[in-house]
Image (cartoon, rainbow, N blue to C red; front, side, top):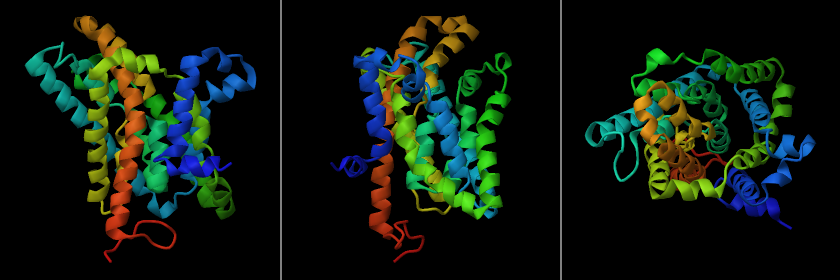
Length: 324
């Protein structure tokens, strides 16, 4: 059976297929992966540890001479996500009020658009970029949570910068970076982890979601997901292109993180006036999580194909950096 080759033919298949399988299992047989022990640890609750190891392995591939690139990319990609989400959310709220347009609330817009799925970004950046693109996750982790949503709503006085969260995300990356630059053999040894770990953290990410969330989110939630991928994904793509690199990796920020589903409740607690739209915003964000997880890999693959068609590839399969 050619299972691996079949999966690899699907755009972002190593990430998308296991993730969707996780959604299916959690929707149809949720208790099957909640029996405890190794089963639950691997298929339900192990995503964080596996993503951390994935980041360590990727960071080990970063050459010390390229240390400035991950920082610059992280800052620019994070800024593009924030300003797009804040501007659209502000505009909708300004002219349509908290109820939003066609049922899509400003709270859901800002919560979904300013937040990105770090695991999916790392997987796609590793597939369509290089270690400097994956290393940008150390900065992108700052949008993981309600901080930027609060900032966009003018509630920064009620929120603190999650510095410890940033440090916690940075430690595996720094450790991998150090190990890879101290020992070339360690760099080669850890290189396999940049691929083999992807399906194993994708499944538990999917097992935290269900198709019922997509149904309850309805059409506004689907529109939100499409908007997030299209606008922020293309913005990220042009950020990387503006840095002189012919890669589709920047489009990998066109996602919404799973924990963004809790952001509307946090904002409603900070500002009671948002309580009336908390519930509908939550399900819209939940729908956007699933939609972006499906669409973002497709967008990255489409852009990568266009770049390869235009510029060709080198013998190692990478996109040529000079015109033919």
